[in-house]
Length: 331
Ligand SMILES: [Zn+2]
Image (cartoon, rainbow, N blue to C red; front, top):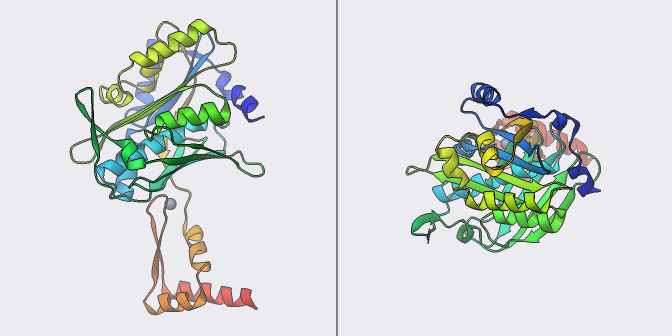
């Protein structure tokens, strides 16, 4: 059932557009430096890719959570990964997907949630996690796997009807992109190539971030699949491409080298949280009355949203109101 739903392209995606120079120019003028994603297919065969640029939303996450460079690289990957996982949802709806990575590494719990409208939010347990560096082909790289550790990765899909669908797999690499590919293969039976990159600058600022999920659709030929694998293998890191100024549709063309790339859908992406003072009040309501009286005496309390770092202040009068509501409820 799950698989079927994913493989049937939503209605809106059936508006195919050839990626002409004019279309590319229009995209550039429309999105400018904002984050967005493109869903692309090949004309000649059944291949699909979702390519995203997430530089700004990763930087917003860093500022909101006061993340260390290591935590920025980790959460940026998770946020981008959650966005890629919205491929499992119906485009443009309120359906959402939550990615939870529970490893035994120093960054602790990692949570990222994205909806089918392109809004994403998330946090890591330890925003101050120190930097781990490894050398690969003579180049220094952030050691994401060391910060994450080993454990499980869980994906929860809320499709808007009934109990959310939840599935876990073990962390196989800790680099997040490979773990998402493993999840898609094991839990969704979707073979795919997943790449995610977050380039953190000298002062911790996110310089470039993005990723892609490429997959053969039912009916893809063996030739096309091999070609796709080869193209993906030859591709420079996705953060390098974005740093060089490549746009998602241009990266899609690289992924589909040898084919004609066609555009199915566009998605504006942003860091956005669904929290509100009303939601934060729920945290107060859950506290024992004794504790609330104490907070009232202390002159009020600030409740912080885990997902976005927003603080909601409650005055002594507002706390008193919660106490009264609770007392009423207790009788
Ligand atoms: Zn929030």
